[in-house]
Image (cartoon, rainbow, N blue to C red; front, side):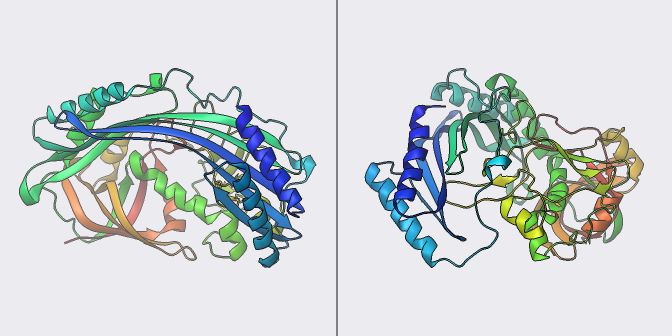
Length: 448
């Protein structure tokens, strides 16, 4: 980790101490990114950004405040510290706030072995433009695709450093390479669009641009001549691209902030069945080449693999230090923050047990129902789990896809949906959220 970020955080901590803080932690992030978009084979837009952000959190007793800046001068650092301490003295007391005890801190201070950074040279703008142009050309080559809304490629890199007056110091680097394409099929009021894309840490792992463009075009074609579905109770299969949203609702319901407020439909479910008996949900922040991996959390606590749900039974909440103290539990190493915000609980890499059958097998078995490929809007009650979302996708009749569907609403209750779902075996294992297509046997559809 560059000495510059180490020096920045130490300067922030020293300034906070000089200004009268009892304790403090500091974060410094340097980031650079470049993105390219093409249209009609020509460059449409190019952006590049570089910068350093610094953040300081101070404690005066049980009062705290956060400040941040993008100017790293000595004068700014001193002013930040003075402002933060003044703000903290006026803040309400929070008996659960505070830094970690030294014996709680992670012994790991870097990301060696996690492969979070690609050391190969940053791709040139010309390389990114060529990738985007190839994706666009592949989409336009699909018969029936009328235009490409956007085709873009990008690269980003970050260096992150965290230090605190409890003795923690650590940092690591990240990189990301992405490529995407949005294709449009049809004409006039009958136009439909869909997309494909890929994002990886290592450029060598990125899918081929031609494959991404072709898949985007094929998906757009499949959405043509859409109709409204009949109203009634039908099985609903959530495509792998969106199935992680269901697990996201479960993760939100076990977040320490929701639990501590009592604002969760799973607030009383510890030790109870929340998924089918054969399914587990594992969090692993130590996975190699995964975007959700990290050697320590935003409070300097160690990250480690844990079972959130084991064989259907809920095992624990997702906690940072403050929510753990409030609930009188041990923290789980799940604090996340940016330079300008305080920590809050967040999940890292998660993986749901995959099934033994393919998505096609589930389609054949579901009889008549809806394969959801995209969703818009939502009305979800976090206290009861009542679920309602706008959806579109493909209609399944007698186990076969027959036509596209749009302008419909799917509804149910998340507790019932999660306990009844049936997984396919099609999850992409390189993603941070490894979740396969999920079949929910009975949901309410409102269409025609």
